[in-house]
Length: 118
Length: 114
Image (spheres, rainbow over the protein chains, first blue to last red):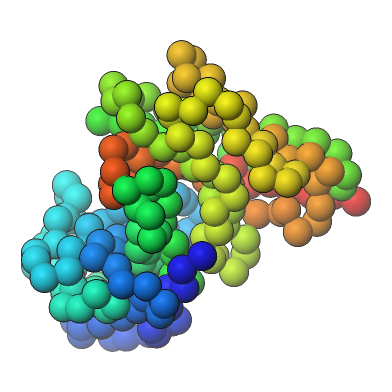
């Protein structure tokens, strides 16, 4: 399957600072990527759909100005958590649609980024 | 809105035995896909098996198989000959149409005992 990387794998930051998380598609050009967050012992919740060259589509309840998504190329999408607060501490996971997405809707996931805001 | 329900927060199975994880979903769509993903302690999401709604035949992947009951909107996962490496969180997921987002269930934690 496709290989998706995330950087950093973990980050600790002070409250009020901004943190950028990168999601890269290493062997496939992804026009669509997804960003999820996962709280401890909970399921994945979709935050937004990232489309290359256009604005991201955010899920209801997700603050667009707080979670900035940029998908400037077919292999890179970034999520910036602006003015982070302790309640933003979570596990953030990106994914991309598989090659024959029109056929299977399968997604390949990155390894995730653990964000801790002090 | 589509919903996915996993009613078993935790399950346990002995090594080499068979276990079935339950999943139900609600949708008004006719074209959709169903998935089971595994999340081990590393938290890397791994696709276990997928099912296209238009296919009547149940999907199988080695020791993993599904029982897809479209009318009942049920999509259970059967793991045969369970192995210690099968211990993980298992998430059922739904996706409608094409190139579409996934909706996940709440997950089932599977323990495998000796």
